[in-house]
Amino acid sequence: MEKREIIRLLQTKGEERTQLLKRSREVKDQSVGNKVYFRGLIEFSNICSKDCLYCGIRNSNTNVVRYEATDNEILEACQFAWENSFASVVLQSGEISSPAFIKRVDNLLKKIKQLSNNELGITLSCGEQSRETYLRWFESGAHRFLLRIESSNPDLYYKIHPKNSNHLFEKRLESLQFLKETGYQVGTGVMIGLPFQTYEDLANDLLFLKKIDIDMCGMGPYIEHENTPLYQHRHLLMPKQERFDLALNMIAVLRLLMPDINIAAATALQAIDAAGREKALVVGANIIMPNLTPVNYREEYQLYEDKPCLDEDKELCRNCLEARIEMSGSEIGYGEWGDSLHFRRRIKR
Ligand code: SAH
Image (cartoon, rainbow, N blue to C red):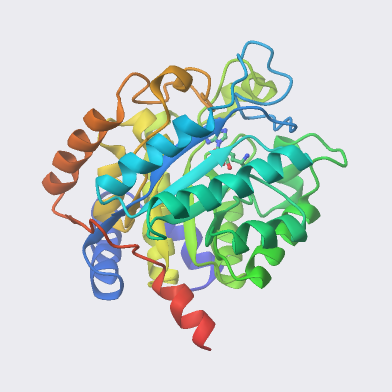
């Protein structure tokens, strides 16, 4: 698919859009099937050294109460995931690279493997780290890593991140490369509907994902947060519903471009539309991340406005999701890792 065609598809409306979404659904069913895999999400710390201009837990936001979940709380959430046949968890946090943090994550990985008879799959989402750290965590049991590029256009990247040595576009690219070389299933993605972002940027993002040959993707609408610098540009944003529709178009086109990768139905979709994640499953996503973060911390992990399910505990969350997914006509792959088929084929090549 050429860039011009992608730009056109991203903007389709009406009947042509219906056709696009139908086609991506067919491609999904043929390539990865109709199953949805769970990744229990544990947002275990909001302490962050970065100052991303869009993010509610950026270092300079002093309105946030910083927390670190205890090992017990984290392991209890993993235990729940395992007992409920979620098969995988995602450990996500702000970005820290102190020796103490690295060691802590390492230790947690080993304990999670232990408590689950080596069965729980583990995805990490803890930002940019050194090659050594990625390797250490890989050897301790993490096998997937999510690190969004946020935007593949360096100019736009520096409009949404401070321009300093702690936020280098090159470093982000290099980290993705390290992750791949280490042997992880690598996931990345972008925010959709950012101020200053064009359709051409988004088309280039999709081509970028294809070029670096990712295994997994998580991408969702950008949602403004009052206590962040990017909020001042909110007058430039398209209405939320349009950002939502565009995010679904992005998922659909990506499914056409990369039929056998795993695509997550991002939580941010649900901040705009209560059934947002299920709608993403219908058009091409096949991964969902039920929130297992202890409820008392959720208020403090608000990356954006209207983050859903702030008070819903994990039991409720599971029941609610199960019902919604079945309604959307998909089957839940309980007890299965649901690894990226693309990854399996890539490592055989
Ligand atoms: N510290 C980790 C995890 C970051 S949070 C890391 O750097 O990878 C996960 C994702 O949330 C980010 O990559 C970003 O794409 C998304 N996010 C942050 N703020 C957002 C906002 N205001 N609207 C939508 N998504 C946002």
